Length: 315
Image (cartoon, rainbow, N blue to C red; front, side, top):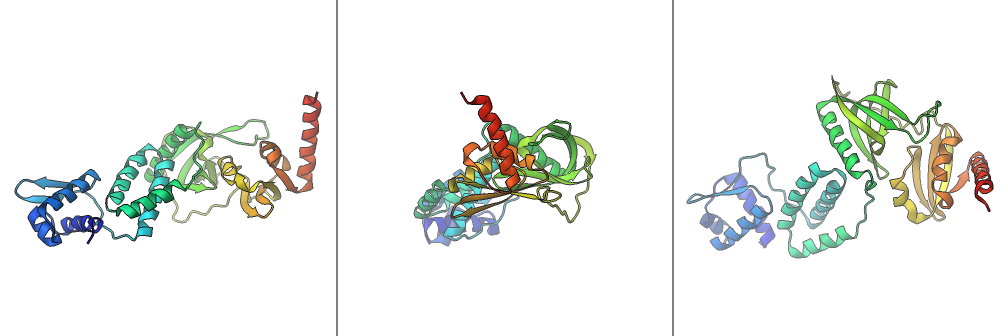
């Protein structure tokens, strides 16, 4: 039994048998009491809730803890990579917990496995929330998680990418939040919108002035949701980008995007819109990096806009 296996087994013995003296643990694992002292000290520093009572031995603190779980190397690597993602995406209230879990896992990993895990973690790049909005966005997510757990209605100000018929971009909504969704590199909340009398999806980074309302709702057992991008939006627009722009596009993804597909010619992005004008603004924001494949109506409209810009800015 190596060091990592012994420390994991030590936690299991304390979990099942309660208070144990160091000399009894040493006899169980056929090692010295000094080795048990070192193991216990390492586990305590890793966050395992072990306490010692003089003359009586060691025990696990009386709290809600899960029993030890045996893991393969790949399972441990998977857990560590998941911990990194949680710490990076869910904010300060999860970062501390993620750090404690990481320490516990690393404390029982053989050094060779830990080096392998570090190499794999360093080789993964993840698209993060835009740094200009990160703190505000994480604050919104924290309050939304609270509302989801307590089934509390929230009131929010929402900024659209495309204007309403009156030209405004903002709307105020009251929603019953059902859950958070992570897709295409961005977070959204799905819930019942009291204004539209139906289930809607709202991008987290466009939510402002979020507040809890003094109203409790009951979440349906079966929540069915169809993305607005395909409901009532029958015009499909295909745009081609360079193949290496997938992460960049994910950080600035339009809510109208319904598919991203890698092809030999590049990254093919499909949008579904109700009017071609709704697609043009997002396409224009990419400048020369976006090439419209179809339909021709979008090409014509973009050509007209380009003509105006040439007349306005050409020397």
